[in-house]
Image (cartoon, rainbow, N blue to C red):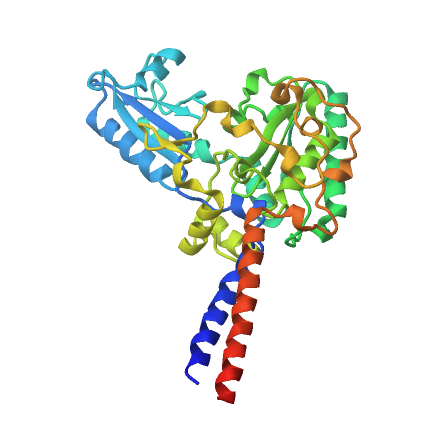
Length: 409
């Protein structure tokens, strides 16, 4: 009679382990909200021996205090003392002549000067607005609100041609409508469809940090651009421009946001490059309420890191940030054909990403999550989970068999 508790306990534990593994409980949007300690950006502050010590201290401690939760690695470099520092090339490249100064460096080594000082003005009057501008702007505030409450965001940047701007807006509207019509078939429910946020040309200079994070220069942006943003202000896929902006491409990118994290996607889809935003505790609390779980929970972070297989995903740089492996293009090689139902990679990516331009007119609905996904829509872990589940059933039946034989004896 003692055999039954052992067999039953083993069976129960096996079943409990197998059940949650049979499907990923997160979608790509969920995973995009989980922060795993990445610091892909760097802010270098520059001083020399002539900079007063109190100014140097404000630059050092002020940047740390303002950006501690931002995902930006911070380092102050003394150009007279740290003569071998690799970040000195940045001030040489931008031609910075007066100190103190600051430069932002993106994951793909793009540079942006941050005006922390101005002639004739006290340093305290210039540094704090400059640091605030790194993370906050009107459009980024609107972007955060939409990311928390909706499926994701189609971010549009206007060009100089009004008719082309109108075409891009119609394309975005059609893509969002297509996703909205299929939201009842998503692996995990999302309450609101994608939002569309438009940056008008008059606002480009005000949004220069946001545009820079997308690889754009506010003064040289003449064509309309579009990007899909999800989760913790992550970009999914490349930034599209001009004729590259089609309904098929936007729909394809948006479809990935709602996909199951075990749907067979390459893991690079789950961790797109982040934009610089002011992600404070109030936003984090709203996200936890909207998702039904806390992305800051250590157990959630552990589970997501295991899903992503992040054991060797990044390499550290001098400023304490993490640089993705494979160089600047590592973010943009997205095998969209892995998404169940999408016709070809060429239907979603522009020619600059895949070589020859693929044919237009591919069925847009094919890029959407299927109404009734089958086993092929799952990753390899699903099959392992079902195998373990089957083994649990066998063990459970064996336990009952042993119990019956023991009672007969």
